[in-house]
Length: 373
Ligand code: SAH
Image (cartoon, rainbow, N blue to C red; front, side):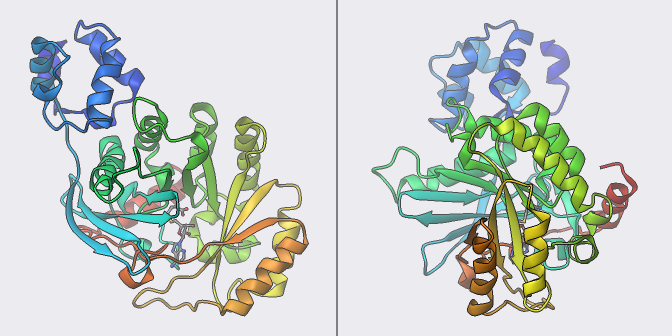
C-alpha cells in the first residue's frame, strides 16, 4: 500500500477526518489509536512538519513525509475594518485567491470561510457570482482557513484558548456543490480533536442545492441556512437562477426533512436578502409569512450590500424595520443581520478574492442546470 500511495499526489492531511485518518493508518500498518495523536498535532498544536510530531514513531513520520503533506493556505494580505472585522486573502492551490472574514462580537468570534474559488451560481446580487467559477477548495483548504485564523488571532486574544466560536460557510462559493470536501471539513471543525466547535455553531449556507441537502441528511447535523431571498418562484428565478432547477416547494420540503434530523429546538435559518424596491415591499412580507407558515425557522434579514457595478439598492433603515416588524408580528423570530466590515468590502456578497480563470462558470453552470450537480 505504501508503495502505491507514494506514487500518487501527496495526501492533504489537514483535510482528513478522524475516520479517514484511522483508515489511512490501518493501510499503513499502524494502530488506529495514533489518529488522535496526529489530529492534535495538526489542529491543536499547528505543526507544519511531521518531524515535530514527537510522540509518533520515526518510521511513521517518515512514511507520512513520503506520502502526505501539511498544506495550509498562505495569507497574501489582510485588511482591518474600523469595527474590528478582519479580512484575509488566502492563496488556494489553484493559485487564485479566496477570502475569509473574522467578525468579533464580544465573547463570540465568527469566522466566515470560503468553500470554492469563485462561484458557478451567478445569483444576480452577489459579487462572487459575477466573477465566475474557478475551482473547488480541498477539505484541507477549508479547514486550513480556520487553522490560519486561530493562529493569527491567538496573538490578539492571549486569554482565550480558541478565538473562533462560530464558523459560517458563507464566504465565496456554494458549499453544497463541493459537498464531500465541505462535509469532511465541518466534521474536523466539530471534532474535539479538531477545533471542537459545537454543531449548533457551524453553519452551512446554501443557495438551495436540493440533492446536496438530501445528502447532508444522511451525513451530518450541522446547522443549515438557506438563501431564500424571495417569497415566490417567479421572483426567485430571477434572483437565484438555481431556483429554476430546484423551486421553492422542493427546497422547503428537503429542509423539513433535514430539520427533522436536527432534534429539539433546532431549526433551519432562512436568509432573506432585502433589496430596495425588488423584494422588500409589504406584499413580499405577506407572501413570505404565508410561504413559511408550516415551516419552523428563524429568519435572518440581510440588507443588500452594494459592490462596484451592482444594479441594486440597499433599502432604507425604515423599510428594513417595517419588513422585520411584519414578520415578527406574524410570530417569526426575525433578526436583521448587521453589516460588518463594509469599509473593507468584507460584508456578505462583497467577497471576490481574485480568480485567475473565470471560464469554468458557463460549463459548470450548464451542468448544474442540466441536472448533473
Ligand atoms: N452560496 C451560499 C453561501 C455564500 S453567500 C449561499 O448562497 O447561501 C452567503 C450569503 O450572502 C447568502 O445568503 C448570499 O445570498 C448573501 N449575499 C450574497 N450577495 C449579497 C449582497 N450583495 N448583499 C448581502 N448579502 C449577499
